[in-house]
Image (cartoon, rainbow, N blue to C red; front, side, top):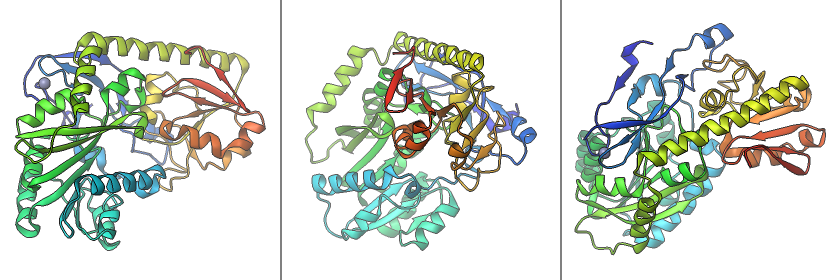
Amino acid sequence: MSGSKLSYRTTCRLCGRNPLERVVKFDPIALPMKFELTKEAAQRAELFPINLYMCSDCGHVQQLEVVDDEALWVGYTYQSAHAPVMPQHFKDVAAKVMAKYKPEPGSLVIDIGSNDGSFLRPFKEAGYRVLGIEMVKEIAKQATENGIETIGEPLSPKIAEEVRRKYGGAAIVTAFNVLAHSDDLHSMAKAIQGLLDPKGVFVFEVQYLMDVIEKTLVATIFHEHLSHHSVKSMQQFLSAYYMNIIDVDRVPIQHGSIIGYVQFANGPRMRNPYVDYLIEREKKMGLDKPATLLKFAEDIYKLRADCESLVATWKSEGATVAGYGAAMSGPGLISMLGLKDTIEYILDDHQQKVGKFSPGDGIPVVPTAELLARQPDYCVILAWVHSQRIIDQNSEYLARGGKFVVLCPDFRVVEGQRQVEAAHA
Ligand SMILES: [Zn+2]
């Protein structure tokens, strides 16, 4: 392991204090986007530690081992329009934000981590000025060419200042799945302060720690996911920047996310009592207590044990096993659930992955059409977010006697029309 791509935090990402207690420990895994042309090259991939820590002061749950942005995101090809659920989700959230906060016609809407500009499109169509900020230059360029002006730089207070000077303050600033991936949230908060109008609203979406714990969402633990946010620790963090959470929605994205709505401390809107209700519920649940996370770790180890006993059964049957979806969470799931020597090939149609080998494990990636051609006895769904869609689209595989294995959030085997509850039930 070379130190150059990895740094270690010693203080809490939100409150800056220590000590932090390690609450969940995993085996090191490869970065999930580095598909290689040969099995050997894939297996030589550098492995990076992956552990969860809890701040003893604010209770924030986070990774302290941080892989460099460059190592993480080079070759990153995700574009939100390709993920079928997101455009509709973005449209719904955009419609809600417009109805709820009624930004003045022609005012500015900025999306941080804007990807291909999907989220800004409905605002543009409704007559707002829009601006994307996307650190992957290639994606920013494409978005601009497709009509959503996008700055190809990572957001910083300096960029925020330049944007403010050129475009004025924003009525709405949004950040979807950005606050979970950013190591320097203080720089992010300062930049948001700089972008936002005094009466503006900052809208963020993050995976919700409460759902991660309650549903044992092991698949959401990967290198990019540096923070697992709760309303309480986020409010405490934002208050240091004179910002308050005024409303929260819980949404089913990634099996449990929250959308937080934030204004400046002296802003014009009332705080929805639901925010305090959630903070109270988090406290009752012990979401800021190490014991709660240690129990979560136990749940993961139990899930792994269930998975291993299933694998042992497959081996004794001489069953063939495939994986479905070369997703970001794939290498983590394979490692955390002990599936490394079980999955013979992964089905995926992504043009930058087909014909290559998965990072770390060196599992070959073949087109999804191979599912029917090869008819494996079991097909483990690694693209866990899309489990239901994958099952629905492959009824023929099931009709021919194939079985899907859903890992997360409920560990189960799906065959034909009925579902056989696995040992985890
Ligand atoms: Zn803290």
